[in-house]
Image (cartoon, rainbow, N blue to C red; front, top):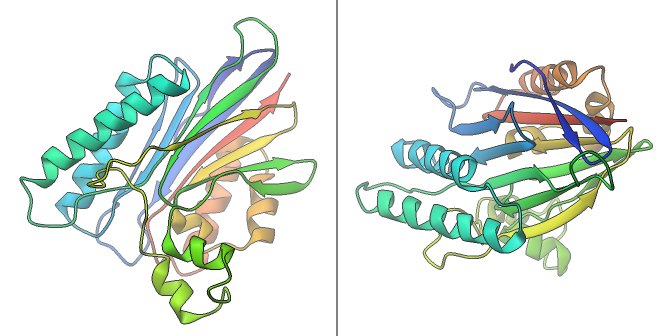
Length: 249
């Protein structure tokens, strides 16, 4: 678990903490996270598959995004993601295995010293961003999977075996040969809000009620610990990574 960091975004103070566990399915952790101490920036990535291609894609995506995203303008962030695609694709040419990863990032866009506080979310894949506000947990991002399309368009019910299988079929990810653009969205902040960035090792093992309850548990570091402990208690069937942001005045 990371030590908590604190940022100023507009008129709000944001405390954040992060952590990751390997679980029992894999012999190593293919999730990658970044939580900046000097600026509002949090990133999670989840490698595809279980091998060096997965590990390399996650490292490249997170390191590149963290070092290149000095400008939070949407066009600049899309440019950074384009660079991530290029680097992951270049690495893939040197490997014989699947090379790609999800990428979900949050950066602050509030005016320095005051004004409206907001974060900008960048999304590729099926890692997720949630917001807990006044007891209501909302999923802010869309899963870029065939399963999501199938559920939205009514191809099958959520419990259908096809939905489970299609959950592994990503339509957008870092290193995709078509270099798809990420979703970029702005989310205003209010004191009392909590945000969660997580890989599907968290969202896929914990239900809505668990996520809402544990996200609201104590300080961010305590919430991260509670969420990750719950994934292990649920079987630990995937690497699990969580970053929790708590907004105050």
